[in-house]
Amino acid sequence: MPAPPPGQPTDEELLERFRAGERRAFDALMKRHEVGLFNFILRSVRDRATAEELLQDTWIRVLSGIRDFQRASKFSTWVYTVARNLCIDHARKAVLRRHPSLDQSSRSNGSSSDGPTLGEQLADGGPRADRSAISKELQEKLVAAIHELPDDQREVFMLREYGALPFKDIADIVGAPENTVKSRMRYALERLQSALAEYEEYARALG
Image 1 (cartoon, one colour):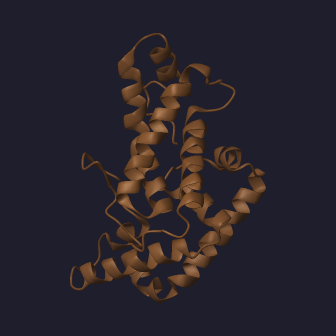
Image 2: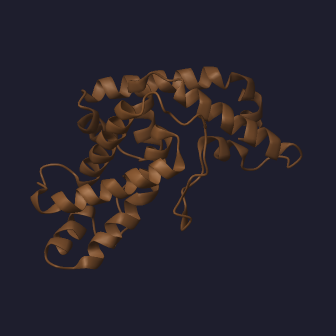
Image 3: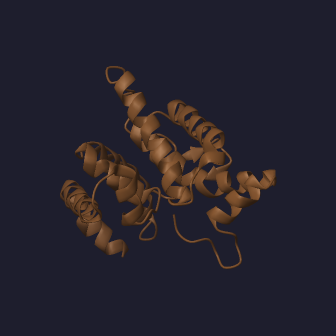
């Protein structure tokens, strides 16, 4: 998670305020992280309703354990670790009942934008003729390519892309050395670039 804007409290400061009795501090923490968390969970489980349930479960678990949280680790690292574990548990229980949809709308609870996906970013700018069709096709290809990644690479990619987490924090979350995490990210990007090679000219033109 990027550092908060100048003048804004850090996650840890908000956490201490909540522990001191300021309830709104936890609301601020949720608002700060819900977009990235929802995108990460949604891309993990590929079902909007399930993602919303797991997002709520994540905050419930965080809230129930917040008094015991140790500041030896970052709050964002802890939150994404909780979400990751819930996604893993869900996958183990529902491995034979996965939702077939490759993509869903990325808006959490309809209250705020979840931010552009890579496909949507590529679709910004350029000629408007055929852009919408190309954007939709490219986004579908991208999502399909992400879910074809090996589990360890996909996990790192989603934490980096949707959570905007530094590699050091991702390493703590997945329990792997930082260099290993960076390698997984590099391999993931190479696979995605290969899968989307047919759109290279289009993407270059938009740049």
